[in-house]
Amino acid sequence: MLHTSTKTPTGGFSFENTRRNAVLEANLSEKGYSAPNARKTGTTIAGLIFKDGVILGADTRATDDMVVADKNCMKIHYIAPKIYCCGAGVAADAEVTTQMMSSNVELHSLSTGRPPLVAMVTRQLKQMLFRYQGHIGSSLIVGGVDINGPQLYSVYPHGSYDKLPFLTMGSGAAAAISLFEDRYKPNMELEEGKQLVRDAITAGIFCDLGSGSNVDLCVITEKAVDYLRGYDQPVQKGLREGSYRYKPGTTAVLTKTVIPLTLDVVDESVQVMDTE
Amino acid sequence: MNEMSVNGEWRSSKVSTGTTIIAVRYDGGVVIGSDSRASMGEEYVSSRVINKVIQIHDKIFCCMAGSLADAQAVTNAVIHQLSFHSMQMDEPPLVQSAAAIMRSFCYTHRDELSAGFIVAGWDRKRGPQVFQVSLGGMIVEQEFTIGGSGSTYIYGYADAKFKPGMTREECLTFTTNALSLAMDRDNVSGGVVHLVIVTEKGAERQLIPGNKLPVLQRLA
Image (cartoon, rainbow over all chains, first blue to last red; front, side):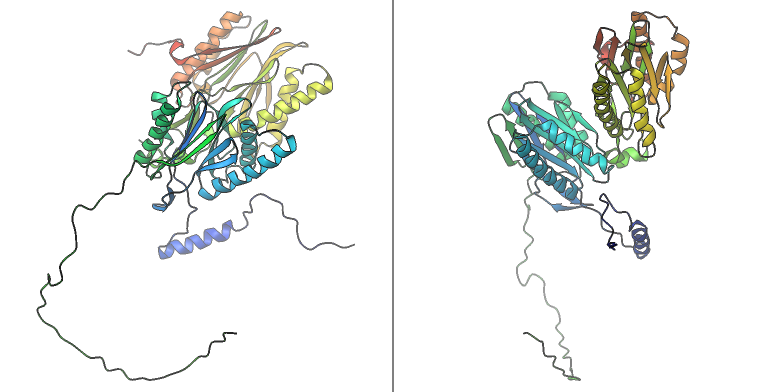
């Protein structure tokens, strides 16, 4: 009988290298270095349901520990024609999770022959995140319009979900939710809703270190989707007040000494590079 | 202010239901109640209106406590399995069947899950019943039961005030008072009170907003 020598991959995460990584990290920290961290999006994301649909909002800063890695990243991802998803947490996890969901939703929708439901997207997301027990660090706000009307769900990294008329997530969630708790009303008009989401994200941008740069909005209604990239830029780069250029000759030269360095050629060798 | 709130560790913690849940049996049915707060870490309330009393069949409900992700996943699996069981038996399921299915999930996956439940409802064979399905998969039938982190503050009240043979109105008062007291003292329980009354005729939901809860002690 013929046996294959390779083991079939079991899926999920492999934690084989954790002990080796721990030893390496200990060695590095002895010398004063630290191991690289996964890039997180910091982030303020928010969503609300208004009269005709859903408005999603996000900031555009991606951080690498305390350095801004990307000043203008896109955190509102496409899932289906009328369903979009904002992602917070580990940037790679949020990006890849939403891309996988988008392709799954397309296949599912082709096999059912119907446009996808927001509840279906949420269910697939939460089942996947629960299966990975929180090791996929992405928090998501899923919003869209389907046959049941406008809907908004939040999905947490460990796999729990919430269905609410307004939601915020990410490191700036506490700042943004304060705006929503104060000014949210059911059945708001479009402009009022856009202003409120913009204000909530701006609160996150100003009051949270992990969020910054611009406000992106995405308005989803029965009729159309309006992706407003760079809707607002609450923070302008400061202009320098004075000029720091000096005229040549500002610094007076007092003395000038020239010391020639006498060098002898000791060895000369030619190495031919094989360029074929 | 402790170190955890300075570092904002709530951002990376699991959502837990904090919680106070309670179920009481009376002659004609059961009264089930819960608070409505979901917390992350000890400082951030991720949802102030979450409903922890989930309908798992027409006349059977369950209350969730513990990790929200685990509780939601188990509840969805139980709803699915219970509806299938009910179709196979061609009759509405017994409350003890629902509790048994819930228990088998909690026990089989006891090392991975961190969620406890109260299963309560009405069936034709034994009438109103209340079961507690705890974290490791223990199942106990009781006249009344309390659960969740907030329950520790009301054991004394519940034991003193409960009497067998209460009427429906007395049960509602008992449940509402117990939940108010727990929500007052426990930082991870709060919000509104969700109540469900299950009888032979069906299930009736009630909601008591935070400002309409009974105030049992004036502090000033």
